[in-house]
Image 1 (cartoon, rainbow, N blue to C red):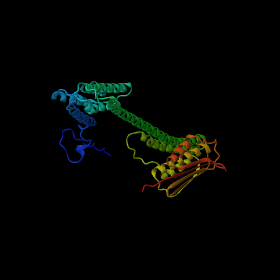
Image 2 (cartoon, helix red, strand yellow):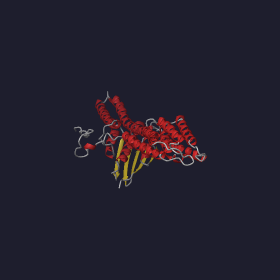
Image 3 (tube, one colour):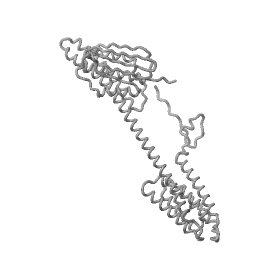
Image 4 (cartoon, helix red, strand yellow):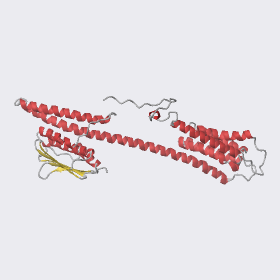
Length: 405
């Protein structure tokens, strides 16, 4: 199938075309950095206007004197508001500059003490950025220095004796400290979100690797067990009955090809390309039974009831039967085995029973049984596996499921 052509994207400044192709990806000039810069410019302009308006206020009696010239009033608004536009790039320098400018304006009376809300807003915005961007003692030092400078400017600008007192200084500490704390809180929340996202990604990668490991274990364990049994049979009868040795080699070749095909499907999950091969399901159980028969196990397969189940449930049932038959071939030797799959509305029941005496006891914590338990647990089902009273071994799994409305 030929590769699909890439979606065309319009170059900056090109004329708009028809359809949505011209807007693929959005305007490149309006990036996140441009939006943040626009926000900072607007914030700086608003802060400068507020500080200019505060500087236009005249001192209250009896400290009435000659009002500063208009250019000095404008300059006060510029030196207090303009640095805010660069607060993201140089947060510490902007905070120091705004604190010094606010202290100078308050100490000289350019901004009266009763109109100190303008300088407080400028210093608060700068300290918020410091809290959000600067960690450790450096941020705390900038906070203490800014509070000290602004409070000292307010106290130095009081010539009447009726100006700011302990209450006003405490208000300055509260406002500037609250702005810094809000910034610190935002920084911690962002760091926590980044850590949580990293942990979620690592957990997803680990779970995917475990899933692929279980798939490869099931594929390789089943196929290699069959190959090992048939290789031993072929070696035993090679001299006396060469025709049976040829049949054993045919089984080995068939099992090898099947294992390679399934390995390609499992390893394909590690690649970025899409894998369109269907996952094995209930329809492939007959192939498992036939391969077990070729290994010397008499298998009776019964599938009845409602077997139109979700793909994940069908894959889990297939892997349970595959692992169970592999264990029979490896541990029980030539024997009889019964595989029964019963589908009912909302539940699939899988039972694998063999009548042979195992060559060695199956470990309850083996990789195969652990993998089956994990698969069943993903569907909130149950799994029971253990020896029978009359000999043999039984694996019984129930897989509940729900159909989408």
